[in-house]
Image (cartoon, rainbow, N blue to C red; front, side, top):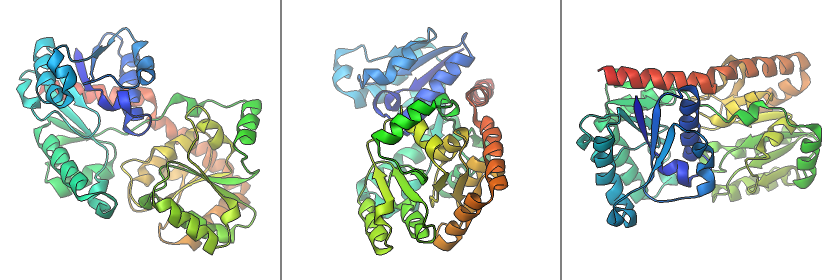
Length: 377
């Protein structure tokens, strides 16, 4: 069997779709050493991001060979990839980042699969420019129509695809996301102490990880903090204009000295942040899956998520869930976890156990099951 991937995000994105792409490719290559995996990349990105892929003998990194296509990546994606798929005889091409090449049907003997992560731009249109919303909608919808199979990263995303793009339900398969193995590994006490000192972390803190944008709803945690005097809040993520609203809310609530926003936390120290935290809180109003919830449970931290999207799929019955508009409800649940040692220990134990539903092996087996089913049809 020969499986090909769109590797653009794997080569250029350090987080998000880049992490997902690298995780999927490595998981499959490790689990199925007899299968050939081709990763198509239109132009060279950050070579460090691809080092982990090059370790596998059954993975090939494929760049444009024609000199013209090397200088025009859009032409390569539109015409070069279908040509290469016909030439190589790939059984399946998997678009890992919401889109497929526009001419994917020109690859006559290759089945196409696309992963749709979320339709955030439809739910929070005011956070995107008009042109971005328009382009995303065209690309996502056409990819769903052209694909032989759509992979949704949650049941919630699957329902959104059916509702907004009128795609037949039977064309969609759900395959949950996973997270890096390093979140399951315990950091040494000395390393945690080093990280705590380096970033001046407080002794006791609530942690939330993710881009600090409106839908992630960090201001809700800030408002809840008024009722939790003995705790600080650490927000780890890229700053956006919404960050100013979070800081303004913190000042209005009189908790600004207890709110720490950090945008320069590398992936190599992030597991220590989770393991140093008292509680992980993620009150996002909309997610495709919610990987930080999984990272926290793998790290042995009790999790509080929000109702309304897919976070109940990511955290299962091991987490607690709050109304994303009710700061009092969130504060009550945080206090409940802090004050009930038995509940806390139960959440940690159940969270670790639940997280194995999203292990590398489970994801790889599920994807291979989908590939084989698509090929057989």
